[in-house]
Image (cartoon, rainbow, N blue to C red; front, side, top):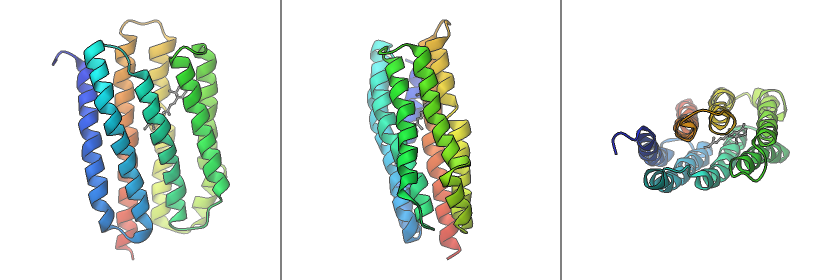
Length: 227
Ligand SMILES: *C/C=C(C)/C=C/C=C(C)/C=C/C1=C(C)CCCC1(C)C
């Protein structure tokens, strides 16, 4: 239905996830070997999201309810894959401690598990939100000040540093769209809270999955041309 604005955002996100997947997959052959896995993982991120968006969209259009479980199942797969990307783009050019990967993973899982427990009403929204924020802050700390930041600045590869830098700003600014959606959908008492929250989450996924992959693609191309 054309009057269902939120339904349209689900539709656009579905199409974009498919288009991005095809693009990243096709481009993988056009970059040097070290970057290929990163492009394949970018394909997996948008591909897994495409799959979930097919279901999320029909739940929204058919029932008018938030597809909370599908959304969190999608995030619990795609966010760790993006964490893998941070690790891979460093590993493509330098030595990285595997503990960095586990710490990033732990932070992102704390964020998502508490977000879900709040949205699915297993625990109250405010503690869920605060604990979720702590998980996100752990990730931000690691990539801006901790082990991740150190490894990137010591890598001596400008393409990898460019990608790392753009990706961490996506995690700071792009990821900030999600807690805004959570607050609007769960903490504020406004009308159309569920619609607004879903439109915001859909926009956030577009930025954070497609743009995130594009940044990796751009760095991979640049590094391949320099070789
Ligand atoms: C592809 C999907 C992505 C990148 C999903 C990211 C999700 C978040 C950054 C969620 C963040 C949240 C908080 C920081 C606080 C608690 C509520 C959440 C789970 C919405």
